[in-house]
Image (tube, rainbow, N blue to C red; front, side, top):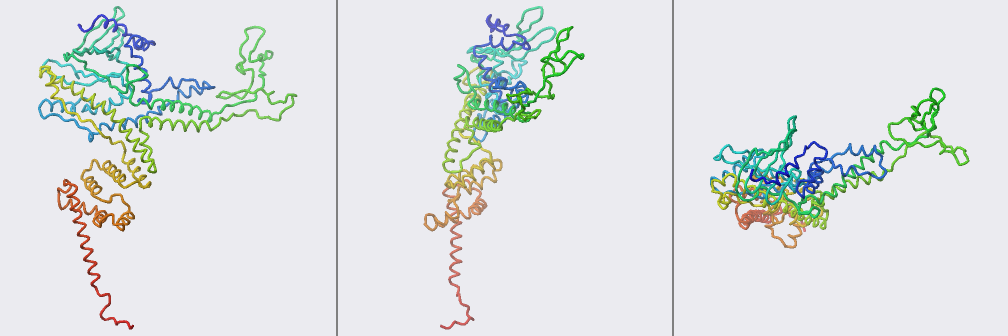
Length: 606
């Protein structure tokens, strides 16, 4: 194993510790690559919200004056409250993979088409690498931006003539035990039985990908064995980081694209945990009791003294009646605060008149209400940090709509940044390595020849981020706010395109009606006023009133109507409008020619 020098072998034997040992994770942090701990810490922080793992560090913080029972209740009753909000954000970001806004174009030759068929139709498990990125890797990248993609054979070939089927594997930070500009050492799995312990690793460098087994028995030291290899002989590393923002907190590492929301969502978890404890306190409030001194007497002569029985012979022991409390009271399954009876006497010894034997301290409700508000606000602020609050809110006036447009622009820019990562880094790298694995030998390992087999990738430049319901609500609110008709026409087009994107036969006439209506979204009052002021023609008003019938007639009379230039389409509609004007004129002339007085009626006398 020429690729394993003494330093690597020593490192392997050092990190191969039993994974079921208590300090195994600590040993890895101390011996793995320099950034290992920081990368793992960032993953654990993100996994709380992306995958809903329990945030022990947040929940185990001791609250002021918190009873142990409440703390245990908070820990046991935790539910991943931020996971659904995070999932909503990820679902929005997933829209970068909408095929309407991007394209992957292959050359029309046998090798390029074979690469296309394998990577976009027959890819193992996911059918296509695009599905792999959108359905699996996207979430991984948000949880662990310091993870890596490694391209390797799906299975090792049985002969040198067998075509390699490449596969992308994602290794999380906790499994990247060493990585630098020369190679990576990636942990696969750990096994243990009565005879031996086994650690499986993948070693990848600029020459090949190797599968290693480190085996250790009770009678011998760890032995490293190669159990498989594939030599790509390309001279560069077949792996790269999932990536994110360059981290200011962790030098040299990436920070998740959605990390800006984490501080707010962490607060949500703590507020919600406190809220659960507060609700429990309302259900089972603090109880107090008036307690008398314990009057238990053992064997008829040894009385309880402060909870202790002290017989003449034998060791003093706890009073079985009061369990060492020295007081007798009503038993309760919850903690009770005992109030001495003399507390209800005046300084002179006379009674205050208060005789209740027990009671409850009711906690205030304002703090519970505040916690609920803070929790809900934290969820909204988390989306706001990702510019996604615009999905839930829409201004009800011109100023609000302007802010909505600004926030939407910021959201588009945020999505564009992530789309660039996937369409300009990940997909090109994947197709580059796929082409090399599948055809590199046939092309004599010629980089230029392999590059010609790869597709041309067009990244998305816009994103469909709203649901039909959200778009419809925005349109309705914009109409209520009396926004200018041009804006309303754009919003109407968005609703139609979203609603009927899978029914092009219905969408075509709808879009034509909106496009060719010269007074689209204008109110009837506005149209009447424009006619009176002679700022629009009769033709425009007639086309506006009859747009649906006109477009339907135009499509029936001319199948190529939809493909004509705008000016040609409008001339046809103006011709339809002219017919109505002429017909109305004929009817008016006929009315004027009619004699309003019947011939058989007498002419009235003057």
